[in-house]
Length: 121
Image (cartoon, rainbow, N blue to C red; front, side, top):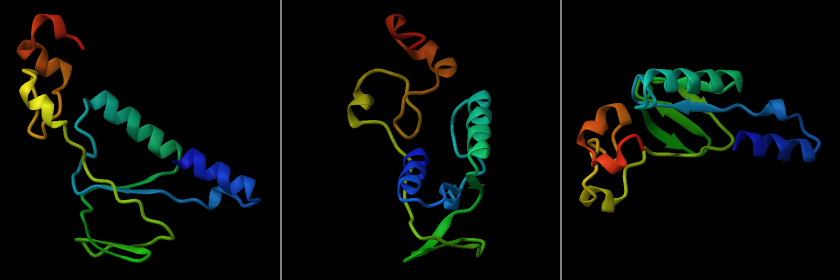
């Protein structure tokens, strides 16, 4: 999204650095991935100038504005609301080890619970 929007601004003759991206998460961690993956993801976000708001549950949204439970307010021209994904319903009957959201569990936790032909996938 960031790449595309920066290019669109450039085509319009506008400065791509006008764009500001903010990521809000109610949790302290914004990913259930293992630590090395979270660290890499955090580095990429920082390199791209994405401001990460942790422990910042959005409780109110109006046209052009977000407010968190702590009272932080962010004015925005555009807001993209994304919620946490879960696994497809058919996964629950697949026999695979799933987490509480119905997604396939991390390999290091799930291999012992998977059929031998699916281990390491």
